[in-house]
Structures are given as C-alpha cells and as structure tokens.
Amino acid sequence: KTRKETATDCDSSLDLPMQWRVLLILGLLSMGWRRIHLRAWEWMDPLPLLKSSLKTCPRSAKSHLEISKIYSGLYAEHYDLKTARWHLRQVEKIDATYCDVHFQFAHVAVQEQAYLELEQRLVEALMCEYTSNQAMSMWTRYWDLAL
Image (cartoon, rainbow, N blue to C red):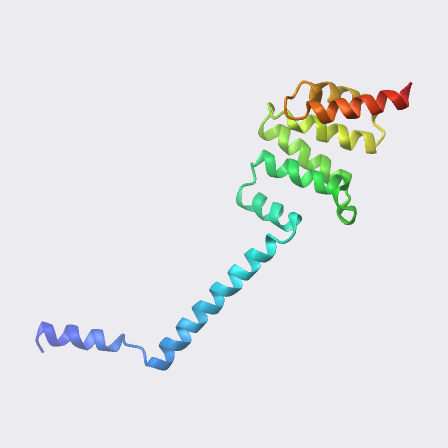
C-alpha cells in the first residue's frame, strides 16, 4: 500500500455512522441545555446566586457581605446570625479597609443585643461614605431608645 492509501484507510475508520453523529450532537445539546437551565435557575433566587458567586470567587468581599445580609434577616427562612457573622469575618479577612462591613456588623449586633459592639461598629459605619446615612438613622433610633 502507498502512503496515500494508508492515510485514506485511517481516515475512513474514524467516520461515525450518521445515527451515532446525531446521538452525539443530541447528547451534547442536552448537556448544554441542562447546564444553561441550572445556571439560569441560580439567578432566580439571591442565595443560590451568591453561593455560586462565592464558589467562583471565594475571596469576593462584596459577595460575602451580601450573603451575610440574607442570613442576618433579609429573608426569614434563611435567618442564621452565626453564619452571617462568619461571612462578615471573611469580609474583614479579605479586605480590612472595606468600610461597608461595619454597618452590617452593627445590624447583627443589635439583633444579638451586643450593644457595646453596636456602638463601636456604628461609629465606624458613620465614617464610611457608603453607609453613613443608614448608620446615622440607626444611631439616632438607638439613642432615642437608650435615653
């Protein structure tokens, strides 16, 4: 046999019958559809979306902060202050300068009746340009009740 004939023999042995090609394409399409469907489902609810975000980027301070809001009472069915605190500590480990975290710590502290921590965190939150308005409102309500 010549080289050309040998190459042709090899190429023809790789050809799949038409039925197998169709099955392969349908299998790949169904796997792709399933993946797209599952990913779209994650976007329908904030908790799976944020969990997916943390799986993709575990050092995202913003994602940890947002998921802590869910666990600190944003959705009653996911209320878990211990988990919320864990995520807030992760934020501080990732970025100690991320000032938004102080207001969220204050929110958790008031629910735990940890008033000394609440006052300390509110002072920090007041100095953060992103949370100062909310912190001032909480500060005013807190002192109105305390006095």
